[in-house]
Image 1 (tube, rainbow, N blue to C red):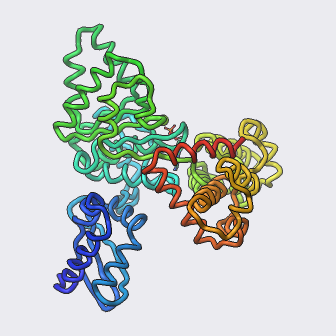
Image 2 (image 1 turned 120 degrees about the vertical axis):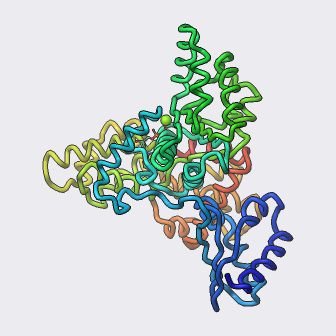
Image 3 (image 1 turned 60 degrees about the vertical axis):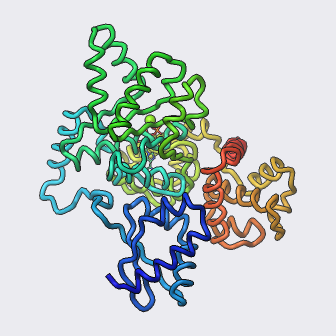
Amino acid sequence: MSVSAEMIWDSAQSLLRSRIAPETYDLWFQPVQAIDLSDDCITLQVINEFSDTWLKDHHFGVLREVLAQAAKRPLQVKLKVGGGVANGVPSSVTGSRNPEAERLQAEDAASARGGRFNSNYRFESFVVGTSNDFAHAAALAVAQAPGQIYNPLFLYGDVGLGKTHLLQAIGRHVADHKKKARVMYRSSEEFTNEYIDSIQKSELSRFRKACRQTDLLLIDDVQFLSGKERIQEEFFHTFNALYDGRKQIVLTCDRPASELPNLQKRLVSRFEGGLVAGLELPDVETRGAILRKKQESLGVKLSDEVLQFIAGCIRTNVRRLEGALVRVATYARLIGKQLTVETVEGLLGEFWNENSRHPISIESIQEKVARHFDLRVADLTGKRRPERIAFPRQIAMCLARKFTGCSLSIIGEAFGGRDHGTVLHACRTVKDRMEVDLHVREVVLGLEKTCQR
Ligand code: ADP
Ligand code: MG
C-alpha cells in the first residue's frame, strides 16, 4: 500500500471531520481505507456494496473536494469494495455448467429450510432506479452480511412496489450463499396463524423454538399485526431473542411503522431501531426498464414505442405494469407480429380506466404545486431562488419526472430553461429530504396523489 495514499486520506479525514456530522463520519467514512494512489487518481476501499452506493450517491462531492484539498491537486476518486464480504449480485452465469439445475437445487434447499420463494424474486431481476435504490442497496447489504450491519431492516412502501420481491431476494441470496443458514419467511398473517395453531395444539414451545432458532427471519406485511395484542406480545419476544442473538430480521410494511395504528410503542421502536428504507413509485425510466427486463422473461420483443407508451400510462404500481405487459405480450405472441401503439391502447382499455387515462402534463403539476405552496406558476418557472420558492420548484420538477414521461431536458426547459442536471439534482434533493424529514415526505406524497387526480 502506498504511504502517500494513506497520508492524503489521513488529512482528508481530518477535513471531513470538520465538515460533516460525527455520526455521518463514523458511519460512512471511518471504515474507509486508502489503498492506491497514482498521479491523478486515488483508490479508496469501502466495506461493502452498500457503502459504495451510499457514498457515491450522497457524499461523493465532498469526498472529492477534501481529497483534492489534501492532495493539493484535483484527484479522480475510485471506490472499491473489499474486505471479506462477498460483493456484487450473484450472477446466474458465474461459470456454472448448468445454472438451471443449480437454481433448482438451491430452491429445494431453500424450501427445505423454510423459505418458500418465488423464483422470479431475485436481486438480478429487480430493476434499480431512484425510487428504490436505497431500499435495494440496503437489502443487498443485509443479504451479504446478515445480522452484521443493519438490524432489523424495515422496508416500507405502497402496494406493488417491490417489497416482497426484495424480501424474498434477501432470503434467496442467504439460502444460496450460506448453505447452513436457517431462513424463515412468513407473512405476518401466516405467523399469526401458526402461533394460534400452535396454542390450539399445545405446541407453543415448539413454535417458539422454530422461530427463535432461525438465522434469518423475514416477515412480510407487518401492518397485519396492527391491533393484535397477543401476537404483538409474542412477536416482541421472538424479535428480542433473535436480535440479542445477532440474527438478522427483515420486515416489510405498507407504511412507516410509526404510522401503524394500534401497534405497541415498544414494537414501533424496535422496528425503527435499525435501518428504515422506503420504496417510492418508480419514475417513467425505471418503469420502462422494468418492462424491458420483464419482456425478456415473457419471450417477446415489443417496440420501444409500445414499451414507452405502457410505461407512460401505468404509473401507480409495478404489479399492474406487469399485468398490462403480460396481456400485451400474450397478444403479440398470438398474432406473431409487431404491435402498434394504437392496438396496445385498445388492448389495455380497462387498465386505463382505472388509472386515469389522461397523461399528466408538466403544466398541471406546476399549477398544483404552486397552489399548494401559495405561489404563482411564474415563481416556479422564474429565476428567483429563495428557499420558499426553490424547494417547491424542486418538488414540482421531481413530480414531473415521475409522472409525465418527459425527458429531463424537456422538464428543465419547462421550468424556465434549466438544464437536465438541475432536474436530476432536484429529484435527488427531494428524495433525500423525504428520507430525513417526515413532514416533507407527507407533503410530497400528498402532492403525488393530487397530481394523479
Ligand atoms: P409489494 O410486496 O410491495 O406489494 P411485490 O414485491 O409483490 O410488491 O411486487 C409486485 C410485482 O412487481 C412483482 O412481480 C415484482 O417482481 C414486481 N416488481 C416490483 N418492483 C420491481 C422492480 N424494481 N424490478 C422488477 N420487478 C419489480
Ligand atoms: Mg408484498
